[in-house]
Image (tube, rainbow, N blue to C red; front, side, top):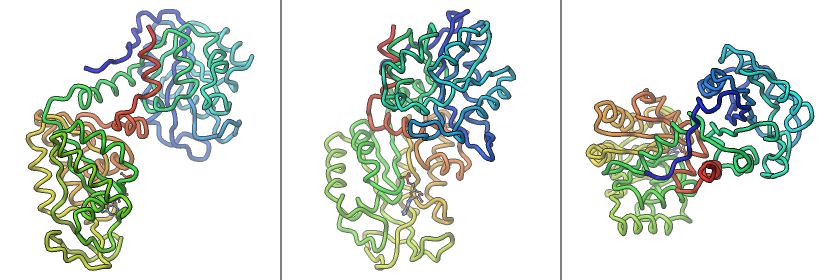
Length: 402
Ligand code: AMP
């Protein structure tokens, strides 16, 4: 197992003043939180602290105010929504590191919860400014990071603050890290990776990392087209990056060198229009008869069968990106079929499956298998950087803390 941070032990938080960094970037409509999913997630950790009589100072950013106060990105309505989810009062403090915030924290009673204003209203947050972090934690005894989804950012409330107080991982952070560790830290082999989506260029680091780690790599979606082009296949008007054919060849060579079985589609579903229900046909690439105005919009039936056969014996699987233009039926067929196959292997206990990043959640939702995968990460950018093998500054900062 790779090194994991210390999880918070709630019994040790009795009567402590705790900064609890969360990700409360929930969707808003007409000044109110329109979907409580994001707000509900850290509720368990906050309530466990409240039960111990801790004073909980909730800190989060919201949107991209670019270092300036911006009323429409205030956390005031989020504090209200959090209070509703906790069924416990949450006092909103319209300040971050000023006298108002300091006084509010000093005035807290045991079991109180307050929420500071949007951290990104201050430019020092994104600059990872130590003096700002010192003020942020000046009145607290302990720092807890429960925001894995923000931990790829070296921001003051994520890294600098963790260096200044005993720092622990919250329960959501631990659940995410433990799930990810099962897949790339310490996987039960064979390990399969399914990587799809639009472009090779946005997933170069990810592909380079995964060919070194996985026993099987299924490449699908628009990005597979660049690999086909590298093999000299005429792909018509398909989405592809001609300037990356050498990169595609390098990834193939790296797979060969590390013993990773690279599975590319042998056939595809092509259409002349990028629209739902466009007239379409299946093409075997070896025959190379794609017309100049046709686009490959999905993997074909042989490609689906080959991908299923390759992943069936695998005990661990990681998935990022759709196998085709899944938003436009019938070009959702490969994504849906493969996702359902992974879902049933996971349900019958033969496979641990983890998915996340970009459009993956929408694709799995579309296939109706969200709850069949072992773990679906909602962390977006942080999940992708972890998949790329990059150390996440917020996790590193916790590892350094005793
Ligand atoms: P990404 O955000 O990189 O995971 O890309 C997801 C997008 O890739 C989705 O919107 C898909 O519609 C798109 N996509 C997948 N396969 C294809 C394809 N063969 N041609 C065009 N777009 C595709």
